[in-house]
Length: 340
Image (cartoon, rainbow, N blue to C red; front, top):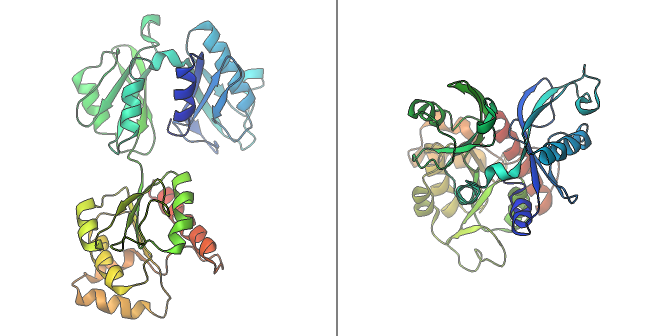
């Protein structure tokens, strides 16, 4: 939804008739994960994807057909199927896709927009199977209990969903004769970059495109400027203060790039002691032993050093600032994928 939100908002403001396709289940080597979305309009607009292209055209046509009928349906794509609307995936996977009019989301779309602007996870519940009058109803479920929508759910079902909001992919469940799909919107991964350096200028836009929320930490106001890092949150503070205030959680990734021990060491001291999913630091292998010695003197436990990616980034052989930024992003994506 985040990937196509701008298109949905624009189309909605123009009064376009919109259809939405959502991957609800996969088996085998399916190219897109549960929750992937494709939006279309009757006027030819297309945004997003539910495959790597192998069934995209069929999904578009099927979504428009569902849009014209006004009723949702589930499309199954599989290698063994031979029908026009069930072309096999070239990668050998099987996918089930929910096709529905976007009008079903009208009751909660503004709340979805607001939630996507924050970091708290939430889910959107849709009806896959049940009486016709329930098929276009939705309900949001969030950790704070603010659950708008026109689909009635028992409190016990909402508690079950809240307990699974941190899972990496959506899921199905049953309640009172209804088959439900819970589309999960987890916390946006947050990349905290310590050091507003040249490498960070390349890393920030690429990481943003890869889905990270960016925070730049640097006490030097001449370095941490909106002109150099548009769209990033800037904290012109010492890393010790900033990282403590940020409450580094399991959806946070920390890249220490300042190459200045006055900034690096306090940042690493806090990051390694936190729940941050990833901690990496710029520097050479030769300097690592001295860095670890300083961190020991700061009281960092020995068992925390195994978490440190040093030197930061996958070894791709590049030396320029942009090449190093690419290697860092590659390692971030790897860490995010493995942890999911």
